[in-house]
Length: 207
Image (cartoon, rainbow, N blue to C red; front, top):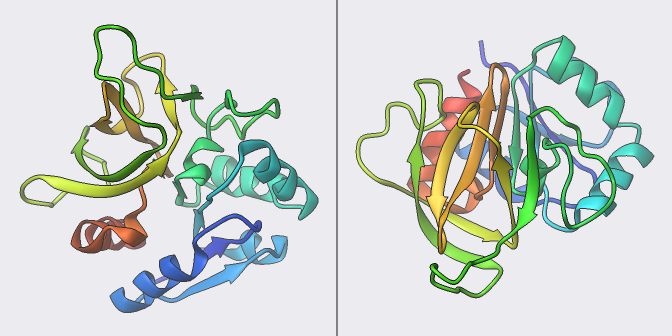
């Protein structure tokens, strides 16, 4: 049975495109900022486009922080963070001062290029090849190279290879997604990534 997917609305996300993709795939989804909906969700998506600190404040203001933590950590409900939503799952970001959700032992840092690397414009905008890691990643079953659409100035940095689900390259290799147990994240935008995004979202919906 397909359980309802709730897309968390905290005022900073590409919500309609995500819901349209899920609808195209035949999955029931709802956009909500109500903590009561989050409490009963079968799966959750935490999207986001914008600034880290303002996103943290909005989650708190709408009463979503505690219920998201409870559902993800205690109830083990599958949850996918996209772009800023992925960064919110780290301990914090150089972009601001507020602590993140801390679900991954990682931090969010701005793109920097040293003297040995090609210096590229920031933000990173466009299609990039993405390399999956581990057997549980959301591109499992995809045959061949995968490309996704990125728009970001900050990226996640993991101190070890643990939990890395995707990497990509922009001047240097960077973490493009993390995954542990029921918690998934993608720095790229699957909802803007055509057949590659469709595969990833179908995999998440069927977790």
